[in-house]
Image (cartoon, rainbow, N blue to C red; front, side, top):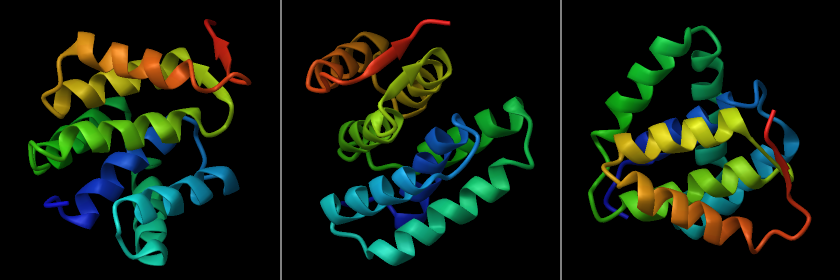
Length: 137
């Protein structure tokens, strides 16, 4: 992984922000992401928590700017696996919402991924989660 741990944590935090709080399941998922990327788990979990606190102070435009600023620092080779981590964070609570999908698509765009590829990756991940609740409202 060539991308700085702080940038990855910031992007993961934007997905947490969608839910409004950094829950226990999201903290556990942050640890799983850190382990998958071979990052220091406690440091990563703390960085995500710090970023979530900072994001809570921003409006939607500020969050979009935060996302764009951090995404532009992602190594292009890392973008697809970071997007997968964002999808993992979105699905970790067992529900996929309209806001989460919107945020995932914004993240994919910021990471330089095509929307069609991002949607297909999400579809592929969703089909592996039989208990997942998809909320269209």
